[in-house]
Length: 208
Length: 129
Figure 1: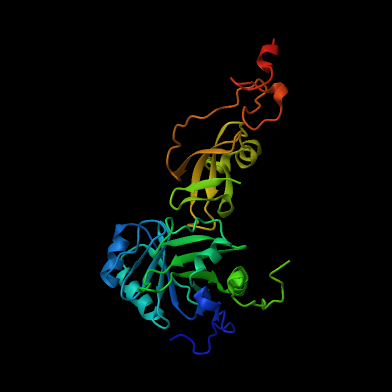
Figure 2: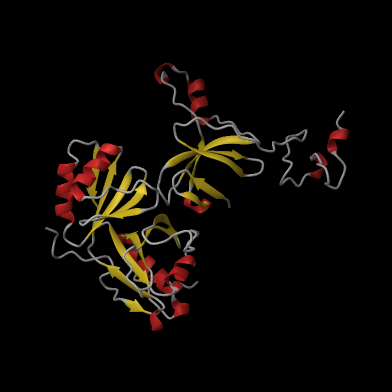
């Protein structure tokens, strides 16, 4: 069981919103995250047997099973994202399934956090912070990209479960130590659309 | 700044990559028998061509994988990218053709530059005895 006393990296940051649904920013706390490194078709088959879906082999894509969302991080590396609290069950399930395979499975739930940016202007906010081509023609629902935002690296996931009449949501998976920087950076980039100003915890100013 | 095509992730900005020096340098297997001079040659000496250069890059902010690239160091044009362990492909490019090795593109030194058709100025080649 995860420690009940644990605190998510952005526990002191309440959800912020811009008027008229232009943008909103929220942390998705305590999601389970496993890193799987394995090479070859045998590992893919074992994962499929255990979870019902193969990890994606196409670069920068994702796949889903009932238990986990699988993000492509590298040709032999995936991140499995689960609901809060279910990472240990998934870990055991995969450990059994992959016992015959040469692989590495690590629980990194507390190392990272997911920040979700949504709203009509979300894509434009991200465009201001990265060199990645974020045109909808280039990156769409279900796509994953490791890149830099501001001065830190993050994994971008374009959510694939958008309901009708809902705007696109983006998740940024960042390290715990830079989560507050990323939060304030996104809020600063969204200020022209009405996101409220956020003061960095460490006291630095976002505007020189 | 240039755009580099990662063999896995596709075209990305140079700021996502880190440089890894010259490619295809194998560590000597008999290092215990090697003298200081041959060892230092392996550790320190690298080719420094003005032209096609095979080098290693790491997609540090993306998939974090190493790969090789062929770059024309005179023009910074990336001619090919290929994965670690693969043979470097054959490429065609404009090589420095001037007498002192000055690049035909991007060089400000017109005195030493070979003028191509349509370019103003006098060809330096004619002056070479």
